[in-house]
Length: 183
Ligand SMILES: Cc1cn([C@H]2C[C@H](O)[C@@H](COP(=O)(O)OP(=O)(O)O[C@H]3O[C@@H](C)C(=O)[C@@H](O)[C@H]3O)O2)c(=O)[nH]c1=O
Image (cartoon, rainbow, N blue to C red; front, side, top):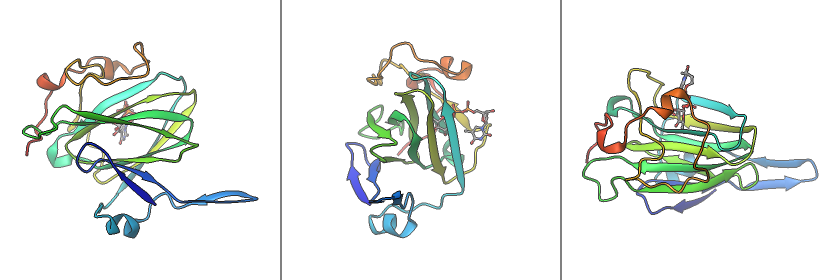
């Protein structure tokens, strides 16, 4: 497993070691001990899997309030996404800054999204399936969002007219969002 730092603290790109042979491939997609050796230490307790039928679907930007905050380990089983993490911790030197990475079935990259960061992705091809582990249970009462195209965040999304859920089309911008993260 290769661990690549990004410009945001504790946001990592992971590249699993892929063992290829005449049958196909084998890879460890999560190994707690290997990540611990890099100082990445989580207790994942829920796995999620979504299918987005159309390319240009954006899901996000999502987070749960602090006492139900989730770390996420995101990967793509089929297709490809532009995956984004935004630092929403008030007082952080990187507050409102974002990083993006392409995760695909081909590059097999994963993204670690820590607590205090909003998460979203845009599908780059049709029928993209995303799988991610989280270290806190889903809590609808704590579920919050930020508008995907908040101009103050300024994410370079690969589309300007995405397919969105009703919920995601109505979020407020970061400066007005219900957000209790601070450092
Ligand atoms: C996130 C989630 C949703 N649900 C339900 C609620 C709803 O009826 C249905 C669809 O939920 P959503 O519209 O919120 O799904 P979606 O827009 O895919 O939400 C996800 O987006 C990405 C970017 C994330 O980071 C995730 O944490 C999650 O927020 O699934 C669960 O049962 N468990 C869960 O953990």
